[in-house]
Amino acid sequence: MGFSPNVSPRMGLLVSAALALLAAARGALAANYEFLAAPETDLNRVYRLDRTTGEIGACQYGLKDSSTVGVTLCYPAGEGAGPQTPSEYSLVASHHQGEGGVFRVDLRTGMMSICYVLNDAVVCTAQAK
Image 1 (cartoon, rainbow, N blue to C red):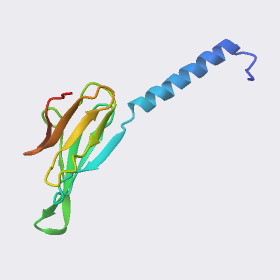
Image 2 (image 1 turned 120 degrees about the horizontal axis):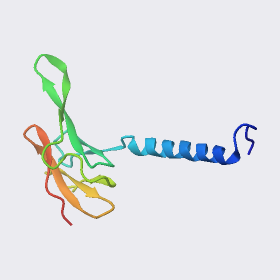
Image 3 (image 1 turned 60 degrees about the horizontal axis):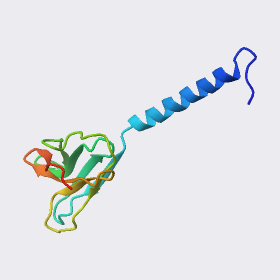
């Protein structure tokens, strides 16, 4: 490893370690999302999950009276669907053709909750195991 005569090898290692830590922290803070369509066969809804925080929302296609293009209708996180304890979350569909909700699972603890759209927001049951 070549160092400038004005910078000690120790200082170079410290700077390299600091840069590596900064890059790792930046990657950890970047949003990492997972998407899953609702299992209900006649519902065009897609759930969005932040894999780190467990926050979940959903969007679906809707018709607009004055347009043939339509509109994207989104539902924000409501009760129980907001950020959880940081972990590693995923979405699982039940494969029940009449089910409009999805399971949010914590891959580290095995806890899970059921999330679905209620009125104008996504809500989730309390986590259980």
